Image 1 (tube, rainbow, N blue to C red):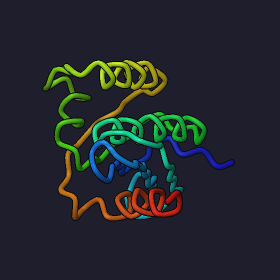
Image 2 (image 1 turned 90 degrees about the vertical axis):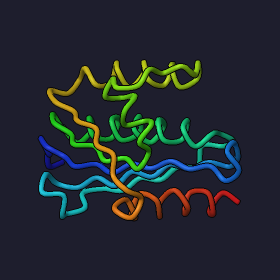
Image 3 (image 1 turned 120 degrees about the vertical axis):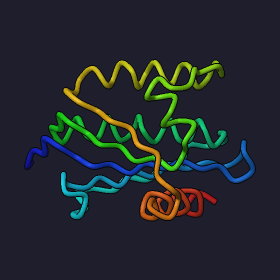
Length: 138
């Protein structure tokens, strides 16, 4: 398997109803952000939008490790989650706190990770994967 030291990853999570049926999407690109290296989608059951957003980042980190990534530029359309992962906002929700700790531990396996907030229009592929995951389950 070809190793990719640097990846650009777009993640998204969504729930219909919040909480409701939820899915996650991960679009992994080469370091230029132009070539799709892999996509992942998964139905995660009943969850909130924020739990889905965090779950997408966890899946992305696990998959990036398998690809041999050392540096990752993440792009999320959840400003809350991006700011929490960057330490700008505190995590007050207990369930999100557990997911935050899991991400923190996974982050230790990489040399550099950045999290950026993007508008939803710039996150179309990951958003499409979320909807496919939910649609395929229902």
